[in-house]
Length: 283
Image (cartoon, rainbow, N blue to C red; front, side):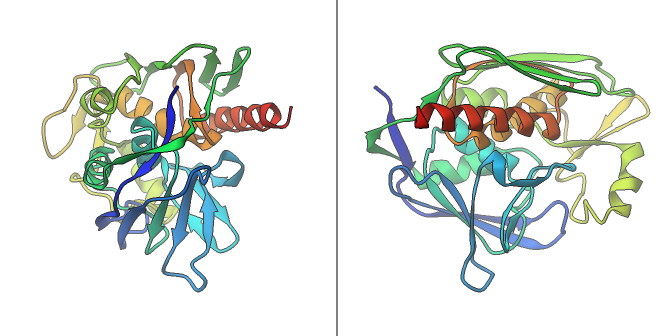
């Protein structure tokens, strides 16, 4: 029987935030059993908190933002992805600003932070949920379905005009943190060159650079270093799914089939899972 887990020690990661452009730091702290993942804004009076749940998502434009009262946290998906992959059920994520550092645009910095913190097995049984029947969401070109299964498996297809390898497909089974770090965590965030002006007009990507993202432009992918995977874009999309689905509130098992996914429908699926989990707990 799997047990709940938290981190052993405090660990910190700091850097530049993607959208605000501000320097920020994230610190993970141990938490008691049945706490969940809680983000705490230590820069604000009263140190307000927000639980990492789909019901607390307030924005899904180019990232996933959660909020409760004054506690607003932007782009939580990369750190949530690493927490899910490491089976960290409970921790306090302290923030000294509204957005975590983007790092190199992947979740590798957060994997390293969790390695430094260590994993503590707790006494209580882990909460693991698989839906009793398939759940399906769609919108625009996006389709996502999750069907029951004994482990988290994601099969994903993406398509972006101008990308030199298009479409891209990858299938990943979340068995261990090592598998996640090797196959998924290195996938960097990306943007189509044509979208940059719109994002800047929205006041976003102030901290963006080729250190933190790849740019799709005119049949090429532009980045500071060589691609880490030939199909790096679809692997980053899986990274986002792993993070967004963890907003359901506990570990999820099942097979997710995703066609051209994005944060809006990822979070909608997480919300459906959260409601089913709450119903099962109240049954």
